[in-house]
Length: 255
Image (tube, rainbow, N blue to C red; front, side, top):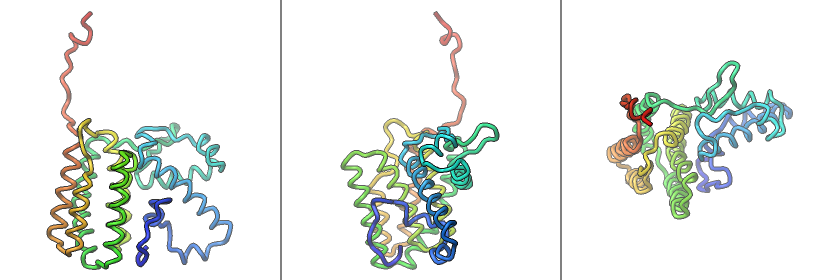
């Protein structure tokens, strides 16, 4: 939160996903407040599992199974899944249930187009409201990324890379931008899992470092340029070619 330079590594997204203002929550009846808290915890566990690729795109999220795992009612699970579906992280199908979203190549390209429009605006707003504390927050997050890379923890690298972009939006101070970028970053993580080329480096640590340096120098033009190049590099590392593949039927069925 602004004014606090600490990074909560035990709950990486806790400061990025406020469901409602704290003052509003404190005014809720105790029973409802407890319910909201329980829903938030289930939501975060599913969200982190998706972000870290422990839940793959297309995975069925059965209500009965999740209710048993989290020791809650199916109705409670249904509320959480509806929230994830609202953020396009989960797909809900009548009579079939809930599944982790599986973006198509066309949807993937739409995600990157949206990010190219939003993230330069995030850079501009962040730089106009920049403080030493905000720079410290960014550098601390970068240290977490670098540590994950040293440990070759790919799941943590993908998660932290996405959270870097969410943190930029949070620090910029526009809740609408932060909410949009949170959804887009999560979809990008799913896209990377689905379409990552075998030799691709989807999100390079040095590019994040360069962006932080440009921000620290209040160079808005350079920060925007580096961000757009960064998004281009991520997209180009993916196998998003949607052209049909010629299949040699004779070869397929040849004895």
